[in-house]
Amino acid sequence: GSNGGQVTLNAVSQAIDGDMIVDSVSTLNLLMSSNSTFTGAINSDNTGEVSLTLDTSSSLTLTADTYLTSLNNADSTNSNIHLNGHKLFVNGVEFTE
Image (cartoon, rainbow, N blue to C red; front, side, top):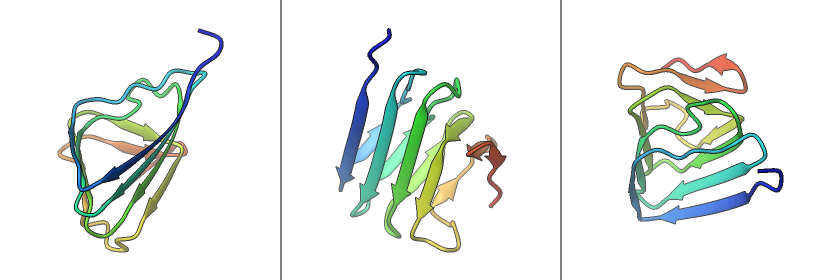
């Protein structure tokens, strides 16, 4: 498609399982708060723009490599991000725990 989509998803106290696919003409702004969890992969084809914001009570568990344009994690220790043997890239740089 040529028109794409611009999505802001506010996950409050939500459990999300599965993959989020973002194509080259789309953007996703994912905001997770209040003990929300995400298990899956986001933008695994590395084609779209994705911004992820996590509060200290929310977590991300990967099931495949994930590509983000930006990451804002309120947990300075990053203990709420579980790579699970997969890779997380933020703006082209591999994230390390």
